[in-house]
Image (cartoon, rainbow, N blue to C red; front, side, top):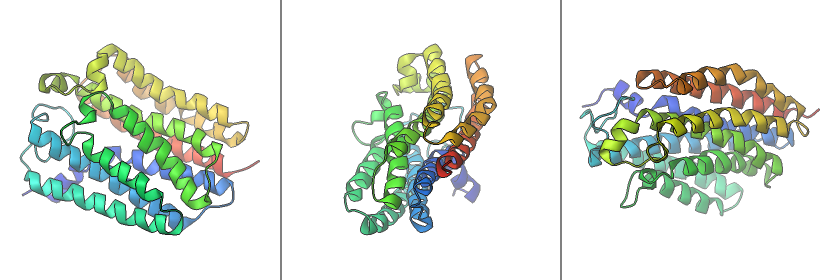
Length: 290
């Protein structure tokens, strides 16, 4: 029987900034337009967190029953490590998805029922990342899905449920958020190239190879600063995000130096902190109109 700390580790808390930051940034956009709604923001956060934890448990389950997590360096996996029966991990994933759906239905009821389609697409994408007969995460499409759902959809969706309309600023702000979320996945998959190659899991990192994946990570971590500069003419304080450049340079240096194994786990944590700091400062810049 898995202990509580095992379930917490299985939820992979270091990935949670990918769920929190889009909601914070989208709320910053709404605040800047004078349309911030705290309770709608909280519901959006509930959706994002439940989806993120749900996809982590779903991946744990799917990879575990396929045997692709037997040899890995990263955080504990409940099924592969034998800490919890596969059915319990599957039940945890389903419970998280149901919680996300309930919060999403509440938002759809007060905005537009078209959000139900977006929510359904998100659940399908979460499950089929490593689950089902054609897991797209095994075919190099994981980063695309992360950019779409934890970048574009999450930021613009959060802003939309508060404002009732889509703005160019929400779309622009979604780009750096999506790239930093991709950076988390890229460094995770970079670390797992050896084990994924043996298991036949063809992630984008496996397909690109070690060197190109390290370049991709650097791009995902650094391009967001250029986007913040592009946003600056409309929201000058968006330049506050540039303060976090040193937080980006540290993990980029580690990755570009050829680090592997546990060193990449530490860099993953730094990437999460970068995303949080960047997201908070960008949010301030978006919320304050000069």
